Image (cartoon, rainbow, N blue to C red; front, side, top):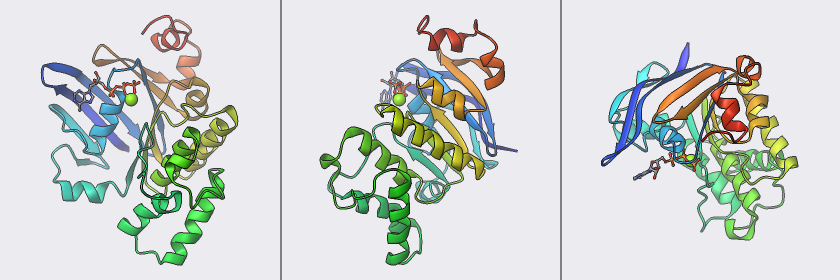
Length: 243
Ligand SMILES: Nc1ncnc2c1ncn2[C@@H]1O[C@H](COP(=O)(O)OP(=O)(O)OP(=O)(O)O)[C@@H](O)[C@H]1O
Ligand SMILES: [Mg+2]
Protein backbone atom coordinates (compact mmCIF):
# COMPACT_ATOMS: atom_id res chain seq x y z
CA UNK A 1 0.00 0.00 0.00
CA UNK A 2 1.22 3.48 -0.83
CA UNK A 3 1.66 5.55 2.32
CA UNK A 4 2.43 8.67 0.29
CA UNK A 5 0.84 9.19 -3.11
CA UNK A 6 1.28 12.41 -5.07
CA UNK A 7 -0.63 12.79 -8.35
CA UNK A 8 -0.33 15.58 -10.88
CA UNK A 9 0.96 17.93 -8.20
CA UNK A 10 1.30 21.53 -9.29
CA UNK A 11 2.76 24.41 -7.33
CA UNK A 12 3.30 28.03 -8.29
CA UNK A 13 4.42 31.15 -6.50
CA UNK A 14 2.73 33.99 -8.36
CA UNK A 15 3.73 33.62 -12.02
CA UNK A 16 6.55 31.27 -11.20
CA UNK A 17 5.69 27.61 -11.76
CA UNK A 18 7.86 25.41 -9.54
CA UNK A 19 6.09 22.09 -10.17
CA UNK A 20 4.09 21.53 -13.33
CA UNK A 21 2.95 17.93 -13.00
CA UNK A 22 4.63 15.72 -10.42
CA UNK A 23 3.47 12.19 -9.58
CA UNK A 24 5.06 9.48 -7.43
CA UNK A 25 4.24 7.15 -4.59
CA UNK A 26 6.11 5.66 -1.64
CA UNK A 27 5.02 2.35 -0.14
CA UNK A 28 5.12 1.46 3.53
CA UNK A 29 8.69 1.09 4.75
CA UNK A 30 10.19 2.37 1.51
CA UNK A 31 12.61 5.24 1.20
CA UNK A 32 12.40 7.41 -1.92
CA UNK A 33 15.44 9.48 -2.83
CA UNK A 34 14.37 12.83 -4.25
CA UNK A 35 17.19 14.46 -6.17
CA UNK A 36 17.48 17.49 -8.38
CA UNK A 37 19.36 20.75 -8.72
CA UNK A 38 19.13 23.64 -6.30
CA UNK A 39 15.82 25.46 -6.74
CA UNK A 40 14.00 22.59 -8.47
CA UNK A 41 11.49 22.54 -5.64
CA UNK A 42 12.52 19.63 -3.44
CA UNK A 43 11.91 21.48 -0.20
CA UNK A 44 8.66 22.98 -1.54
CA UNK A 45 7.46 19.47 -2.31
CA UNK A 46 8.30 18.20 1.18
CA UNK A 47 6.70 21.27 2.73
CA UNK A 48 3.55 20.57 0.71
CA UNK A 49 3.42 17.06 2.15
CA UNK A 50 3.00 18.45 5.65
CA UNK A 51 0.66 21.25 4.71
CA UNK A 52 3.11 24.13 4.93
CA UNK A 53 2.43 24.90 1.26
CA UNK A 54 -0.90 24.56 -0.54
CA UNK A 55 -0.82 22.80 -3.92
CA UNK A 56 -2.21 24.63 -6.95
CA UNK A 57 -3.31 21.38 -8.54
CA UNK A 58 -3.28 17.61 -8.15
CA UNK A 59 -3.75 15.48 -5.07
CA UNK A 60 -1.66 14.32 -2.13
CA UNK A 61 -2.73 11.22 -0.23
CA UNK A 62 -1.12 10.15 3.03
CA UNK A 63 -2.37 6.79 4.31
CA UNK A 64 -5.19 7.01 1.75
CA UNK A 65 -6.35 10.34 3.07
CA UNK A 66 -6.42 13.31 0.71
CA UNK A 67 -4.57 16.01 2.61
CA UNK A 68 -4.15 18.96 0.28
CA UNK A 69 -7.21 20.74 1.59
CA UNK A 70 -7.10 19.82 5.25
CA UNK A 71 -7.89 22.36 7.93
CA UNK A 72 -4.93 23.53 10.02
CA UNK A 73 -6.26 21.64 13.07
CA UNK A 74 -6.20 18.37 11.09
CA UNK A 75 -2.65 19.08 9.96
CA UNK A 76 -1.53 19.47 13.55
CA UNK A 77 -2.84 15.95 14.08
CA UNK A 78 -1.26 14.57 10.95
CA UNK A 79 2.14 16.06 11.76
CA UNK A 80 2.37 13.66 14.71
CA UNK A 81 2.72 10.86 12.19
CA UNK A 82 4.59 12.74 9.46
CA UNK A 83 7.82 14.34 10.62
CA UNK A 84 9.79 16.85 8.63
CA UNK A 85 13.49 17.20 9.36
CA UNK A 86 14.00 20.76 8.12
CA UNK A 87 16.89 21.56 5.83
CA UNK A 88 18.29 24.20 8.20
CA UNK A 89 17.46 22.42 11.45
CA UNK A 90 14.86 25.08 12.40
CA UNK A 91 15.72 24.92 16.09
CA UNK A 92 14.18 27.28 18.61
CA UNK A 93 17.09 29.61 19.37
CA UNK A 94 15.80 30.64 22.77
CA UNK A 95 15.50 27.04 23.94
CA UNK A 96 18.25 24.70 25.07
CA UNK A 97 18.91 21.44 23.24
CA UNK A 98 16.91 19.64 25.94
CA UNK A 99 13.97 22.02 25.58
CA UNK A 100 14.05 21.69 21.80
CA UNK A 101 13.76 17.91 22.07
CA UNK A 102 11.15 18.06 24.82
CA UNK A 103 8.95 20.42 22.81
CA UNK A 104 7.19 17.91 20.53
CA UNK A 105 6.66 15.52 23.44
CA UNK A 106 5.19 18.24 25.66
CA UNK A 107 2.92 19.36 22.82
CA UNK A 108 1.79 16.02 21.45
CA UNK A 109 2.30 13.25 23.99
CA UNK A 110 1.06 12.41 27.45
CA UNK A 111 4.41 11.28 28.76
CA UNK A 112 5.52 12.32 32.25
CA UNK A 113 8.53 14.63 32.63
CA UNK A 114 10.64 11.71 33.83
CA UNK A 115 9.66 9.61 30.81
CA UNK A 116 10.46 12.58 28.58
CA UNK A 117 13.84 12.96 30.25
CA UNK A 118 14.64 9.26 29.74
CA UNK A 119 13.69 9.44 26.10
CA UNK A 120 15.74 12.59 25.51
CA UNK A 121 18.82 11.06 27.13
CA UNK A 122 18.58 8.01 24.90
CA UNK A 123 17.96 10.12 21.79
CA UNK A 124 20.96 12.34 22.57
CA UNK A 125 23.14 9.26 22.92
CA UNK A 126 21.89 7.85 19.60
CA UNK A 127 22.74 11.10 17.87
CA UNK A 128 26.15 11.55 19.49
CA UNK A 129 24.91 14.59 21.38
CA UNK A 130 25.29 13.49 25.01
CA UNK A 131 26.24 16.37 27.28
CA UNK A 132 24.68 19.10 25.14
CA UNK A 133 21.37 19.24 27.06
CA UNK A 134 21.82 22.67 28.56
CA UNK A 135 23.44 24.36 25.56
CA UNK A 136 21.63 26.76 23.24
CA UNK A 137 21.71 26.28 19.44
CA UNK A 138 24.14 29.22 19.10
CA UNK A 139 26.57 27.39 21.40
CA UNK A 140 26.86 24.21 19.31
CA UNK A 141 28.37 23.62 15.87
CA UNK A 142 26.33 23.62 12.65
CA UNK A 143 26.65 19.86 12.34
CA UNK A 144 25.41 19.43 15.89
CA UNK A 145 22.47 21.76 15.24
CA UNK A 146 21.61 19.59 12.28
CA UNK A 147 21.64 16.46 14.42
CA UNK A 148 19.51 18.13 17.10
CA UNK A 149 16.99 19.01 14.37
CA UNK A 150 16.90 15.41 13.19
CA UNK A 151 16.68 14.09 16.73
CA UNK A 152 13.75 16.42 17.38
CA UNK A 153 11.95 15.35 14.20
CA UNK A 154 12.22 11.74 15.33
CA UNK A 155 11.09 12.26 18.94
CA UNK A 156 7.45 11.33 18.33
CA UNK A 157 8.35 8.08 16.55
CA UNK A 158 6.62 9.12 13.33
CA UNK A 159 5.32 6.74 10.65
CA UNK A 160 6.68 8.94 7.89
CA UNK A 161 9.84 11.02 7.89
CA UNK A 162 10.76 13.60 5.31
CA UNK A 163 14.49 14.23 5.45
CA UNK A 164 15.65 17.47 3.83
CA UNK A 165 19.41 17.11 3.26
CA UNK A 166 20.05 15.44 6.63
CA UNK A 167 23.77 14.89 6.07
CA UNK A 168 24.71 18.18 4.42
CA UNK A 169 27.53 19.79 6.37
CA UNK A 170 28.23 16.72 8.50
CA UNK A 171 31.65 15.06 8.74
CA UNK A 172 32.01 11.47 7.47
CA UNK A 173 31.68 9.99 10.95
CA UNK A 174 28.41 11.74 11.68
CA UNK A 175 27.16 11.16 8.16
CA UNK A 176 27.56 7.46 8.79
CA UNK A 177 25.71 7.72 12.09
CA UNK A 178 22.79 9.44 10.37
CA UNK A 179 22.81 6.78 7.66
CA UNK A 180 22.63 4.12 10.36
CA UNK A 181 19.77 5.89 12.10
CA UNK A 182 17.81 6.20 8.87
CA UNK A 183 18.36 2.49 8.24
CA UNK A 184 17.33 1.65 11.79
CA UNK A 185 14.06 3.55 11.38
CA UNK A 186 13.53 1.94 8.02
CA UNK A 187 13.90 -1.48 9.59
CA UNK A 188 11.06 -0.48 11.93
CA UNK A 189 8.83 0.19 8.92
CA UNK A 190 9.12 3.97 8.75
CA UNK A 191 8.29 5.34 5.31
CA UNK A 192 10.57 8.11 4.11
CA UNK A 193 11.57 10.60 1.47
CA UNK A 194 15.20 11.61 1.46
CA UNK A 195 16.24 14.80 -0.29
CA UNK A 196 19.98 14.79 -0.67
CA UNK A 197 23.02 15.40 -2.84
CA UNK A 198 24.96 12.90 -0.75
CA UNK A 199 24.77 9.94 -3.10
CA UNK A 200 26.63 7.37 -0.98
CA UNK A 201 24.00 7.92 1.73
CA UNK A 202 21.19 7.92 -0.82
CA UNK A 203 22.36 4.65 -2.37
CA UNK A 204 22.78 3.14 1.10
CA UNK A 205 19.26 3.91 2.29
CA UNK A 206 16.95 4.51 -0.69
CA UNK A 207 14.94 1.82 -2.49
CA UNK A 208 14.15 4.06 -5.42
CA UNK A 209 14.77 7.51 -6.81
CA UNK A 210 12.95 10.36 -8.48
CA UNK A 211 14.84 13.06 -10.34
CA UNK A 212 13.28 16.53 -10.49
CA UNK A 213 14.10 18.72 -13.44
CA UNK A 214 12.22 21.28 -15.51
CA UNK A 215 9.21 21.23 -13.16
CA UNK A 216 8.53 17.50 -13.55
CA UNK A 217 10.00 14.17 -12.50
CA UNK A 218 12.27 13.43 -15.43
CA UNK A 219 13.35 10.00 -14.30
CA UNK A 220 12.31 7.40 -11.75
CA UNK A 221 13.82 4.03 -11.03
CA UNK A 222 14.85 1.56 -8.38
CA UNK A 223 18.28 1.85 -6.82
CA UNK A 224 19.33 -1.36 -8.58
CA UNK A 225 18.23 -0.04 -11.98
CA UNK A 226 20.08 3.21 -11.45
CA UNK A 227 23.27 1.55 -10.30
CA UNK A 228 23.29 -0.37 -13.57
CA UNK A 229 22.54 2.59 -15.82
CA UNK A 230 25.56 4.87 -16.01
CA UNK A 231 23.87 6.90 -18.73
CA UNK A 232 20.81 7.70 -16.67
CA UNK A 233 19.98 11.33 -15.95
CA UNK A 234 20.49 10.75 -12.25
CA UNK A 235 24.00 9.43 -12.90
CA UNK A 236 24.71 12.40 -15.14
CA UNK A 237 23.44 14.71 -12.42
CA UNK A 238 25.49 13.04 -9.70
CA UNK A 239 28.60 13.20 -11.86
CA UNK A 240 28.06 16.93 -12.30
CA UNK A 241 27.45 16.68 -16.04
CA UNK A 242 23.94 18.16 -16.00
CA UNK A 243 21.96 20.41 -13.69
N1 LIG B 1 7.53 31.01 -0.11
C1 LIG B 1 8.03 31.15 -1.35
N2 LIG B 1 7.69 32.21 -2.10
C2 LIG B 1 8.14 32.35 -3.37
N3 LIG B 1 8.99 31.48 -3.96
C3 LIG B 1 9.37 30.42 -3.25
C4 LIG B 1 8.93 30.19 -1.91
N4 LIG B 1 9.47 29.04 -1.45
C5 LIG B 1 10.24 28.57 -2.46
N5 LIG B 1 10.18 29.39 -3.53
C6 LIG B 1 10.85 29.17 -4.81
O1 LIG B 1 10.58 27.86 -5.24
C7 LIG B 1 11.71 27.31 -5.89
C8 LIG B 1 12.06 25.98 -5.28
O2 LIG B 1 12.58 26.17 -3.97
P1 LIG B 1 13.06 24.98 -3.04
O3 LIG B 1 13.50 25.60 -1.78
O4 LIG B 1 12.00 23.96 -2.97
O5 LIG B 1 14.29 24.41 -3.86
P2 LIG B 1 15.21 23.15 -3.51
O6 LIG B 1 15.09 22.18 -4.63
O7 LIG B 1 14.87 22.66 -2.16
O8 LIG B 1 16.66 23.79 -3.54
P3 LIG B 1 17.97 23.48 -2.62
O9 LIG B 1 18.61 22.23 -3.19
O10 LIG B 1 18.83 24.67 -2.82
O11 LIG B 1 17.51 23.32 -1.20
C9 LIG B 1 12.83 28.33 -5.78
O12 LIG B 1 12.89 29.04 -6.98
C10 LIG B 1 12.35 29.24 -4.66
O13 LIG B 1 12.82 30.55 -4.85
MG1 LIG C 1 15.84 22.62 -0.36
